[in-house]
Amino acid sequence: MTAVVTGGASGIGKALAQRFSRAGLQVVIADVEEAVLRATADELGVVGIRTDVADAGSVAALAAATVERFGAVHVVCNNAGVGGGGAIKDLTLEDWRWVIDVNLWGVVHGLHAFLPHLLANPDGGHVVNTASVAGLVAGPGIGPYNAAKSAVVAISETLAAELRAEGSRVGVSVLCPGFVRTNIFTSQRNRPEALRNPSKKTAARAGNDAIVEAVRAQGIEPAVVADRVVDAVVGDRFWILTHPEHLDAVRERFAGIEAAASG
Ligand SMILES: NC(=O)c1ccc[n+]([C@@H]2O[C@H](COP(=O)([O-])OP(=O)(O)OC[C@H]3O[C@@H](n4cnc5c(N)ncnc54)[C@H](O)[C@@H]3O)[C@@H](O)[C@H]2O)c1
Image (cartoon, rainbow, N blue to C red; front, side, top):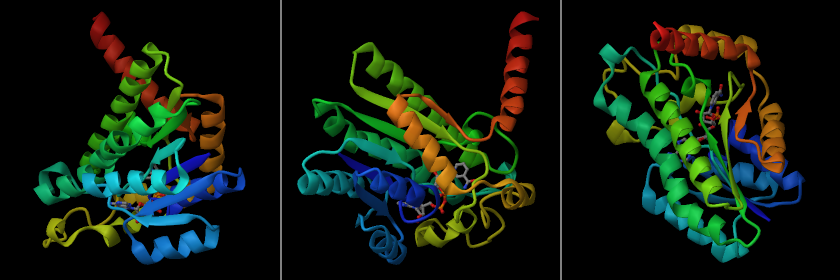
């Protein structure tokens, strides 16, 4: 069996690659940060393919190279992501474009390139899309991130319903972690020159100060997240949550919707 993990050079993606590799899968990690990609691929003994998930052609080439090398692909983790913060009133269009290009279009490109291969497998396969708790409740200061992650949740729900309706053997999960100790707060390292924000007023960090502090204080290790993902893939479960304490905010949101509908 073969697994592909985008954003596999660091953080959650690296932990996923390690976990799949330990479970005996052949693993391809795809990442835009070439030097770290090479180092991680060597460290884990997996294949590294330089990929920009914001670029449809790059992701199509990743799928083609994977299938050429391993013959098939069974697990696809559309995980690459960046954090970009700033109040909506201050954001530039480049701030929006960069975060949405990677976090939303990256998932769309991954589905477009890999679904035909998963569907062609006689024994099916599994897609894991990395969203966030930010895809379930939208807090202040990370508008583009919230928008992209909400869309990733919606796309995942849609895909799961479509595949279920046709009795497909391809499963879908959506990963909605709370805070995880990764390199997401230095996401700017991978921001393309053309989408940089010269004023540096916004999106200089992945989130507002409260979020950065919360990650330091409450962040869990990526390996814990990877274990949950593997359990969900094996058990064919859709929702993957890591921080039940965030459900209060989800309930509060739903209570507002319910109250509006009933009154
Ligand atoms: N860390 C958290 O608290 C947290 C919480 C919820 C969701 N997430 C999500 O988890 C996923 C993984 O992030 P992480 O926290 O491990 O951060 P990370 O920065 O450690 O890893 C993200 C990886 O994505 C790569 N990447 C960035 N842009 C890319 C592009 N255009 N093409 C290919 N690769 C690209 C980076 O080089 C990096 O290796 C992201 O989708 C993120 O939004 C993280």
